[in-house]
Amino acid sequence: MQEQSIKWKVLFGGFFSYMFDAMDIMLLALSIPAIMKELNISMSEAGLLGTATLIGVGLSSIIVGWYADNYGRRKALLWSLISFGILTAFIGLASSWLQILILRFLAGLGLGGVWGIAAAYIAETWPINQRGRAAAFVLSSFPVGAGIASFLAAVILPSYGWRVLFFTGSASILAALYVYICVPESKAWKEERAARLSKKDEPENVSISEIFAPELLKTTILATVVSSCAFIAYWGSTTWLPTFLVKEKGLSMETMAMFMLILNVGMFFGYNLFGYLADKLGRKKALIISFVGTTVTLPIYVMATDKTMILWLGPAYAFFITFAGLFGSYFAELFPTRIRTLGAGFCFNIGRGVSAFAPFLLGAVAAKYSLSTGIIICAVFFLLAGLAMVFLPETQKK
Picture 1: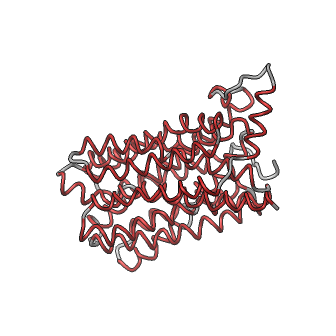
Picture 2: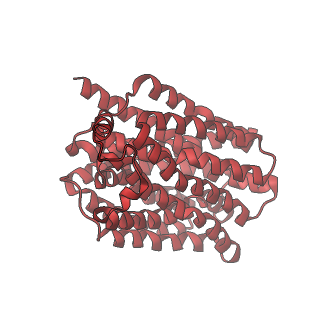
Picture 3: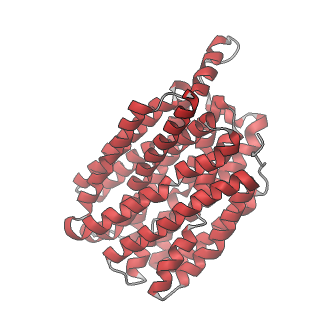
């Protein structure tokens, strides 16, 4: 009975944590048009703000993943939530592009840690036949957080500006309070940690070299390639979608924010349906379907000209952007408990780190051609992610 209670506490703790993680990440994308105008910066400079965030996120997989596997999921999650919330709020006080750049990099170190911890927690508290749905539900909080950010942008940006919008990022401390009060440390991690300490022939602490051991090397590399291609496509397009809707589709800031809100509704439903498919068809098949869907729908969305079509094609495209949720159960099952957060977090966040230059490069493409051209190129990387998935194993029965 106690274990049943714990798994639900973990579920909602993970949901709220990743929701605020997503909200803080999306605040930048939604603020870019206003920041560019006030600070008089170029598209390439604006793209570097997204790049700085993702470089921090990439490094976090090593720092936070190592800490979580050695010192506990709970402690790592609390530090991540508190750090990125405070640092995001400080952006509202920044007076230059460089200050925002530094703060986004530092916030990224906390932002990247939440996913790996949540994925490990779910893998260690939920039965395998429910794990796909549980992980997908927790990570479906990403579109919820992005939707909240879009709503706040629609309300705050026109009247109060982007600085006040960034102050709302400190709300992640509320999730930290929930985790501190309600979510216990992972029992599986504590047992594994105790067993590790009792064996004198095993090193006390986890080392990053373990995910590159011969039996895991191929898996680690291929999973990181899949993640990298997927996130190059995702962050390359998502960072610039709000600006694309304003500059090339002629939407007002308020209308753009509401379009992004509706787009994220489609993503929320996609996350949860694909979580169900992952438990029924297998994680690998569900991921391939997700990548094929984004490859087809992204160019259609970008090429649409009628505003009503743009409104409804947004959630149709976003419905297939479920790979991050599916990675939650899939990557966690690729690695043993001892190195689960480090392994899963490495593949996921190094992928996000590799994608760090996508916003900058897409900004350069936009400056020479158009944002629509750059965003359509992103569909190619979704396709490459799907092709790389073919060479990875199915984990459903592990």
